[in-house]
Amino acid sequence: MKEVYVGIIICFIIYLSYLLFVVISKRHLNKYIKKSREVNIVKKRYDLNMDKLSPKFVANIFGLGNGIVIGITYIIVMGLMHNFIIRLVSALFIFVILMLIEYMLIGKILKRKEAK
Image 1 (cartoon, rainbow, N blue to C red):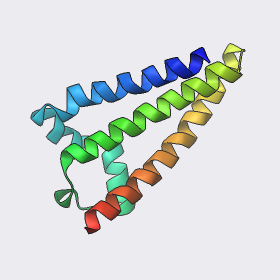
Image 2: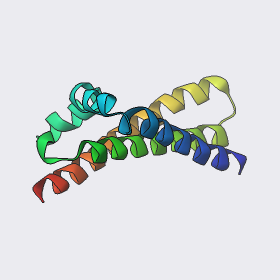
Image 3: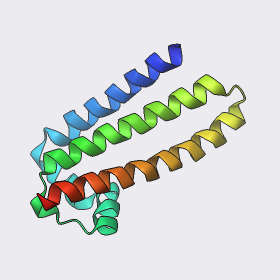
Image 4: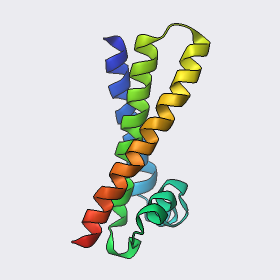
């Protein structure tokens, strides 16, 4: 149960760091939207027009998604596995799978938001 609490705390810390260092700072926000790999991957895959989307919304949704992915990865790996090598390999595998799912969900959400 301790892992769940720590995973939730990790999720909040990552989201708050995105909020403090990206969303609030206008200079970092514009740089994040234009040069971030994760934004560019989703933009190319789902053919998004970033001019129609709010940069703060995009940064918030990526920050929240990344926090959730890292928190869930921590909960699964630390709660179920005990060997260091197995933890490391499974964390990488789980992280990649969750990131792909996250990018797919964010792409669909942003595509709907762009259409409005």
